[in-house]
Amino acid sequence: MRTDSYQGHDYYLMDEWLSEEQKLVRDTARAWVKKEVSPIIEEAAENCKFPQHLLKGLGEIGAFGPYIPSEYGGAGLDQISYGLIMQELERCDSGLRSTASVQSSLVMYPIYKYGSEEQRMKYLPKLATGEWMGCFGLTEPDYGSNPGGMITNFKDMGDHYLLNGAKMWISNAPFAQIAVVWAKNEAGRIHGLIVERGMEGFTTPTMHGKWSLRASDTGELIFDNVKVPKENLLPNKSGLGAPLGCLDSARYGIAWGAIGVALDCYDVALKYSKERIQFGKPIGAFQLQQKKLAEMITEITKAQLLTYRLGQLRNEGRATTAQISMAKRNNIAMAKEIVSESRQMLGGMGITNEYPVMRHMMNLESVITYEGTHDIHLLITGMDVTGFDAFK
Ligand code: TGC
Ligand code: FAD
Image 1 (cartoon, protein in one colour):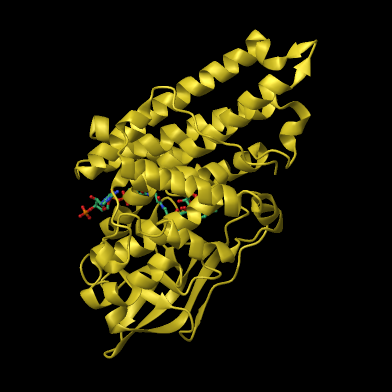
Image 2: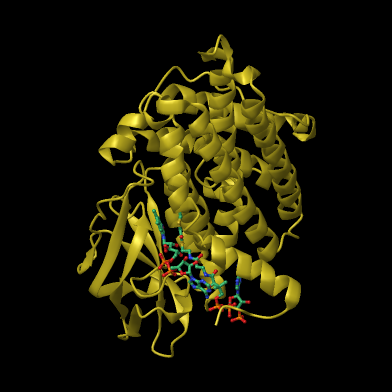
């Protein structure tokens, strides 16, 4: 990749709404990404491997558990700071943000929210620094959008639980030390279990052949009569609402992350439009190219306003699942459109790894699918405004 000269775009002066702490958090993440990740991200995507040496740095900038209280090792930040970190990570690569989202919202959050005090103290501080990594097993080969149908199950054997089943499409699985796994008990009730690498019968094969999110490791979780200690069950919430509650937090982070992708592609296209000369003048002087850029910054600004407000509502504990769905769905669709327009503005260069645009374009194909597909989020909004459930 070329030198990373990204500076951000703030057309409606939204920085004026940010506190000094929020700006510091964002600028720290941005500086770290530029120094440590931008120079290696194309290579990581080409090699289809998450660069694990980045984990310590991610912990240091507060990307693991930004809003988890400091007594458990988290950064103790507010929801807008959390969003800004996700924006800066995804500005570089969705896979980088994914690694942090899973660790924060899908592993640390359920342990913090549904775990015992012993579980919190055992796992959260190590997860916050990146010394331990976790993954989140909800999706199964036959149950993606409909996780309530899962067949992974556990039986009470008296002194332990016996876990059987399989999960697929699991981010961070190939290298994670622990997995927060959702499985049904004998009564068919969903519970969360912490499964540790090394438990007999537990394997995490890597999934190969992805053209998207290549800088993030994705795998399966296979449970073949795994003996899980009883103290590894998350005691404080059960039912499908438990994993879905974690998704609210991760989807909110993705809404910010998608703005990061859009900002990066807008930034690249704007700069290119001023440098690239055709027919004797910069292509940015042609009305057709200006239309693209004007529409890009308009859509980015609308998404920034929507998402900032959502952050305020989350800080007040008032954001609903449906509001989060709207932001996730809108912002990814917005980013996809901007990535596509930006790629065209770069002409042939847009398909090369000289620019991040094509990588972002491929990444968004995962982002629009995971954490609830584009269709599922539309149905969540539809259900919210009509009162009718159109899923089944
Ligand atoms: P439904 O009957 O609507 O709900 C079951 C129970 O859950 C409650 N609930 C929620 N609770 C908290 N937060 C939410 N967001 C909730 N949504 C629903 C609900 O009130 C109910 O509670 P109760 O007490 O009445 O039992 O469930 P359903 O089976 O009809 O499904 C609804 C649907 C389709 C919206 C849901 O299943 C869904 O969201 N599906 C999408 C699945 C999904 O998003 N999977 C993501 C897997 S993880 C992932 O992709 C990580 S990628 C990470 C990365 O790399 O960044
Ligand atoms: P399906 O549910 O089979 O959907 C196929 C199509 O049918 C979609 O277009 C969908 O919108 C549509 N559809 C489904 N139901 C309906 C309906 N009721 N009405 C209308 N249309 C419908 N999962 C995890 O648990 N943990 C992870 O860490 C994780 N990481 C992931 C990483 C990557 C790179 C990817 C690609 C996925 C990841 N996932 C993870 C899984 C992800 O959450 C699922 O892929 C997603 O929820 C969709 O499930 P599915 O792929 O089975 O698609």
